[in-house]
Image (cartoon, rainbow, N blue to C red; front, side, top):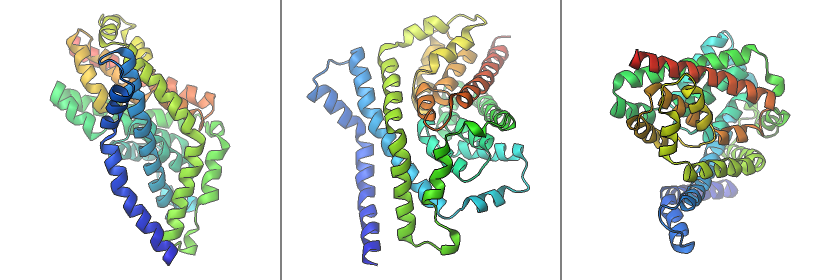
Length: 342
């Protein structure tokens, strides 16, 4: 009992510490870059270094928190119980449910991956988990509010609808292709190591230990990929100006939408960070469909996400994931351009 109480007390004390650090990461980043490193304001290298110093701890803190919570939640649901809950539901219904679940979870692509892993480990069909992974960063209440404010409710509704279609159909297609063999074996082994049988009625201590073990297992395997992915995004963030993007994507050529996706993939941002940039691009002459295709590729198909997924998935499955989602984004981009300009 004493050991149990100690763990709970430590966790309760860590919560305000986590909140304080997380809410002040930008201040810490600015202090390190501008005061300690004494880097010049508005320089490209300054923006990249500041982005890196801010995003790495932010993403890592979110990952640790989310993985810990998911690890505890998994102690309530064994793979057998999860599979039983899905019995009787069609694959398409599962894709729809996972996509709507993604809407109400405001995570960026990188921080949505722990939940993606939890779904796979729990025995949920691979295509259903991909529906969640696509929908979670691409469609959320932040994106909806910003889109309504900048472009009006019609554009926002069409964006949400088409984003849902991409998530549902991409997951459905991936499942039908039967690509489970291209998932890393350790993903399926993690749950077996750290799950607690429901029949044992685990204590709070057991559940906390399971969450901590899950954090150690998953973060220990992917932390280097997270840092590498954010580093790539930091370089693009500092050295690829908006003017260049507008110049490259401003013409209504047939290749502008595929080009927007190619340009957007190396970048890294969430909806709140990229939508204001999209607004600027549109003001500079980029068509709406092209700008939104760029936005979708940044938040739903980013290189940092792909680098992190490489630790979880084999290249064959990653290639299918990129291809299916990119095709959906291209169709959405042409749809927006057609609706607006024809």
